[in-house]
Length: 440
Image (cartoon, rainbow, N blue to C red; front, top):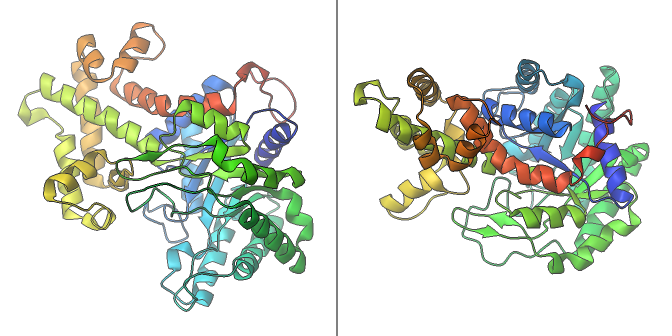
């Protein structure tokens, strides 16, 4: 069962093995396919998570409800010949996040419906995050209020799982600072969560769950989200520093079932990812870094298209994306400051990758499809692949990836995933499935 894979992996980690799980937080089908292909190559499960912004009972910014996203991911797995039993679905930041402008009671009622929809659809990793203030709340919520609201959502999740005879979910508590998806402002030094703060979060949640009659669920709380001191903004990455988390890491010494979950690990170097896992951030979240890699590949292919096709036949993908972002600026205008040239550069190349919100637009998606079909029909000369996608050129020459434009894109996304796979599974030949048998 999907949740068993997570608890087994965390059990191995708590037993002293430097293993972990990476979580793919993206709703784009090409990214999901790349994640599934990577898991197939490694002989592991794949963990794909939807955030409360992407997917909710009203459709989120993707237009997908939890059952829709489930069907999307499982359909891609079926197309790839990847066993459904090795697909783990998660819901990230489930709580009143989407309804912060509403009064708390209204927002929490929506959050209850949200959690129920995720659990009913078969999601088995549930992040309960009630840390955000609503319209009639104080600016900063007390730990008690956050935990009590999380317990309220936990009750909904457990009741829903029981009603649907579904697999009992595993849970994640806590939140990170800054907000999900990368910092809005330019970063300086970033401090890890203080150890006493982490202990308080654990203690207050444990007590709130017990007070709600849910103390028996606590062994299925598998992770605590804290800030390990990693983040990215538009142009900079704050790298993990092992020496800065010495006291924080000791918080887990007294917690037999808990590891840390690290958000915003995108763009961390391979050595830092390995260090994070060794230091008990056994769940690593990655999202914008994957669509960033996809954008790199698609823009490279668009430049190849310019070399090969007359203007009238081109997809003009880069310009189509630019014009759509200018026509609908809501997803980037409040994030990218500066003069017009600075904003233009950020729209296209920022680490925070606000461009990812536009790939699903019909006009942009049509241009992407035209680009891929144009290049497949024309054929891409190897020297041009070497010019714009050199790593993929080497693998293509070695026969390690198939020819075709989309295959090049998928492999470029896998370049962003491979360091996570190596960090979480340093000895892939020793991996087992949840029955204890070696993976095929």
